[in-house]
Each structure stands twice: as C-alpha cells, then as structure tokens.
Length: 472
Ligand SMILES: Cc1cc2nc3c(=O)[nH]c(=O)nc-3n(C[C@H](O)[C@H](O)[C@H](O)COP(=O)(O)OP(=O)(O)OC[C@H]3O[C@@H](n4cnc5c(N)ncnc54)[C@H](O)[C@@H]3O)c2cc1C
Image 1 (cartoon, rainbow, N blue to C red):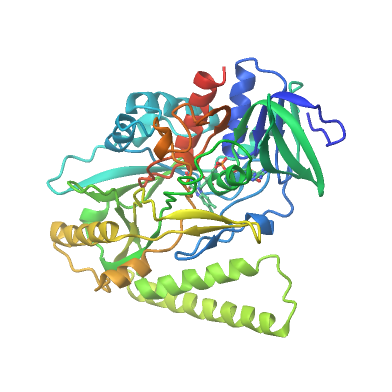
Image 2: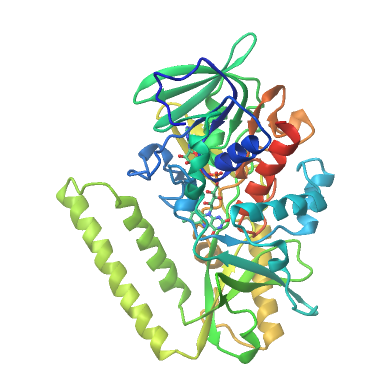
C-alpha cells in the first residue's frame, strides 16, 4: 500500500528501486510466489505530473540522446513508448551465454519470453514469418502491440498488503554496514536510510549505473560504465516503389502492426533496413529530427530570457517550414518508398557512461565505430544489388552515413557488465554484484549485447527469470 516516509519500517526483506516496467514485473512476480515485506520506491509519482525532472536528463558527448528518454513515474517508459517488440537472435544470446557473459541460453531465454505474454506482450509465434530463405538477405520480424502496453495498468500490485510503496522517493545510494545493506534515499529533501535483505535495482540503465557508482559497496569501478549501447538509426535514401517490397512494408491487423526488417545474411552485424511508404531526403529528415529534438529540450522550461524565447521560435518556424517542404516532396513522389537504417552497436569498452561528482550528472559517450559503419555500407549495397535498384540520396561517405544514422532510439543498454569472471565484469551471472550477493541489478544495463531488437520484452523476461530462479 502507499505509505509515507513517516510510516516506513526500518527493515524490509526486499527493496525494489524504480516502479517502471522492470520494477513492476519484479514486484508482481515476487507477490506471485508469496513473498512478503517488500518496499518499492519510485522517484516519480502515480501519474507523474512532472515526467522529466532535470536529474533524469542524459548528457551525451557524441551522439545526441533524447531529452525525454527516461520517463519518471509508475509504469516508467511504458507511459511514452511505442510497444514495438522483437526477440534477440539465437547466435547472439548463445554467444554471450557460452562466453559466460549472459545468464540464459537461447532455449531458456525463449522460455521466459513466452511468459511475458502475461504482461500483454505478443505470443512468441507472432515473431515467426514465412519468408523463404534468400541467397544474400534474411529478415527479422517486428511486432507492435496496439493500443500500447501500459505498465501503469498493473499499479494495483502497489496496493497489496505485503507491499509498501513510496512515490517521490529518490534512491541515492546503497551503504554497506558491517552486517547488512542500507538503501539511502531522499523524500522531499529529507534523507532516510532503510535496511534491505535484498535490494533490486530496477531504475533503468543509466540510473542503475549512477546508483552503483555512488554506492559504498564492493564493486569493480574500473569496468562499471563500460560498454554503453544504443540503437542509432536514420533515413538513408528513397527509391521507386516496387511490388517486391510489399511483403516488407508494415501491415496493421487487429491490435498488431508488423513489419519485416531486411538484414544481410552473412554479416556479423544485425543492422536492418526498414522499407516505409513515402519519400524522404536523408539530410532534410536528419535536420528536421534534430530540430524536433531541440524543441523537446525546451519542454517545461520557461523562456526566461528574450534570447531563449527568440531561439525557441526560430527553431519552431524552421521545423515547420521543413515539415511543409517534406510533405510537398512526399506528395510529388507518391510512388516512392524510403529506407531507414537501424544500426546494431556492439559492446565496445570505449563507449561509456560516466558520473561527474562535481555536478552530480551522468554523461554518455558513444558512437558508431568503423566495423558498424562498414557493415551498414555493405547492407545498403547488398540491398541495391539484390533488388537491382538505385537508392536516391544514398550517403556517399562513411562520415555522412555516420551522421545520418546517429538519431537516438532510446534503448539504453550496457554499462553494468555481466560475467562469471570478477576481473572483467561488474555483476555475476545471478545478476548480483560480484561480492555483494544481496544487491541485484535488472534491466538493460546488464546486457553485453544490444542487437537490433526492441529490448523491453527481453528485460521483462529477464526480470521473471530473476525472481523465479534467484530471488525465491
Ligand atoms: C520514446 C520512447 C519509445 C520507446 N519505444 C520502445 C519500444 O517501442 N519498444 C521497446 O522495447 N522499448 C522502447 N523504449 C524503451 C523502453 O521504454 C525501455 O526499455 C524501458 O522503459 C525500460 O524499462 P525499465 O523498467 O528498465 O526502466 P523505466 O521504464 O525507465 O523505469 C525506471 C523507473 O525507475 C524510476 N527511477 C529511476 N531512478 C530512480 C531512483 N534513483 N530512485 C527511485 N526511482 C528511480 C524512474 O522514475 C522510472 O519510473 C522506448 C523508450 C522511449 C523513451
């Protein structure tokens, strides 16, 4: 039930940080197996009136990260997300399982993916397709649930008698005492410390990283933050529509929208091309998305100076002029389709999340490397050869390709590396911190791969696995 900091107990069996998608799943699954005495803390509110507090902003040094990529409130990102889903490739999951960097092998992963149906995710059979084997290309199926899955709808679990829930409660760090672990948090600037037998961090990739970095526990600080991944994308050209493309373009049926992404068969990268109806010039699309991003960053900020006020309206006008131009060229070229490229970012130690104590801010530093860019070029060339077509406005250099496909998709992953070996990972295969058996991390941060699957369904699968196998 909902409590205040005045009525909080001194100690709980389980403390969950974050009532987002993963936190709500962990809570529901704990209750399912009869667990009691659970505290769940959430920095937002039931119906967050201030969805993007400044402390949740992500500052990025290379690629721009969406200003609103971390929703604060019960239900977390599902309040704003698109409910698009896909599952990770067998090769990817098994590769990291075999190298002891991921706790599940593919067959186990699928077992728990099946269980996500209870939370409204598609049935596993929906990801199958009849696309026959082609010589150079392969396809990946994406399934969007409509209307979107909202984890806010499960909020009745917060009212359970075995649950204490505090909103507007910001977890700051974990403090280790001689015999136990304490979670330190603030509620309306008041500082509190509560003991937890088991503490499960479900605060989203970047916030989980920040909490661990600030905590006074045994942790491999050298590795913490390494291997941040995202899902940068962008438009790479337009071309005449052809009936061959029909099977790849998105389709709506009942409460599903599905499409087939096109991948290169023998590539070690899972980048994919998505064919969409319409006509787009990549550079114009890129500029309009960047302007839209700049407008997002003004959300909620009062134009306190005439300069800021002017800047905002200049951007707004520019944005709408470009949108009108885009609509006109789209009408003229009604018989075209455009190609969107989704990049896979591989685990790379140089792509990092860092914490800056002096301003209490988290920075992200990541970009596509040469391997990723070469694979993207190969995929585009394969597409042209396979379909015997010429892509208009195709990026000529790797530099342009890098820029055009750097738009953020908000799938923050990595940074809290999972692994059997303590020397080169932060958490073990139980998802608990090496040497701190009762502190668990669940969600995107622990993934050593990002693939190109919209990952939330897999986070939920992992949360169910964690409770059933490690939190019993
Ligand atoms: C615009 C957008 C569209 C997206 N579309 C898709 C999609 O189509 N498909 C897909 O698979 N994924 C999508 N995603 C990604 C998806 O939203 C995330 O993968 C998902 O939200 C992660 O779930 P989570 O529970 O780990 O984190 P969240 O849902 O972000 O929940 C974390 C919760 O923890 C709380 N919290 C954070 N820090 C603290 C703290 N210190 N103390 C207390 N509480 C804290 C937050 O307030 C939040 O409520 C999208 C994301 C965005 C932004």
